[in-house]
Image 1 (tube, helix red, strand yellow):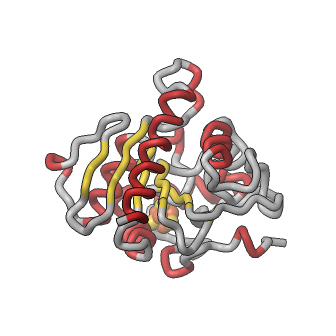
Image 2 (cartoon, helix red, strand yellow):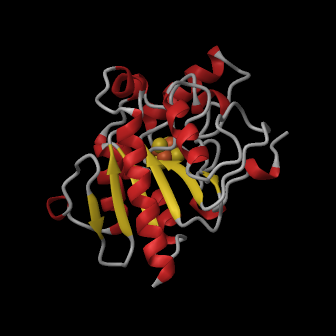
Amino acid sequence: MVAPADLSPIPQAEAPRDCPLCPRLVRFRLECRAEHPDWWNAPVPAFGDPDAWLAIVGLAPGKHGANRTGRPFTGDHAGILLYQTLHRYGYGNRAASVALGDGLELAGCRITNAVKCLPPENKPLPAEVKQCNAYLRAELAALAPSAAILALGAIAHQAVLMALGLRRADYPFGHAAIHELPDGRTLFDSYHCSRYNTQTRRLTEAMFFEVFERIGEHLSTRAAA
Ligand code: SF4
């Protein structure tokens, strides 16, 4: 059974379970359903607080992670640092996300992906990012006007810009970059907390914490204004 905390915070930003819009991803979804009928194997909805002041955007579900469990960044390596960090900075009531119904709740934060369906080899095609962008646009439209957005990796960063109708050339991706957006929101960038990036130390724990420190400073300045 799906617990209340696991229900999508913004239902209008969610795809139907059998969303047909990306033929390659639909084929892969059906293969996964045949191979693992007990897994989620469907578009993975956003998770977290409907009144979030921080939206975190990842790339796409991992096969053994979100595609298996049905919650972003849950069940594989990529979520370990993310959920530990959210707990450290007061957004989560637990330091680990294990599965739907595990009691994890987020306050002030919600998490989604640029692409809601599992892509082969964790690599969505540009056309799939574009196709799924309407859902991300709806997700971001529901954010408060002074909210922060954290993009994990360059593709998530570009998907956020596309959703907001902004030009890439005006907002280049860079780890720890901060972009003030014309609508009053602020976009923060980080390298993705993937297994590859953390194990090669392209992204260290300290680097990730630094990004959250800056987000915290930004949000407290906005709250005090
Ligand atoms: S990636 Fe998005 S648009 Fe494409 S099939 Fe999945 S939910 Fe639909």
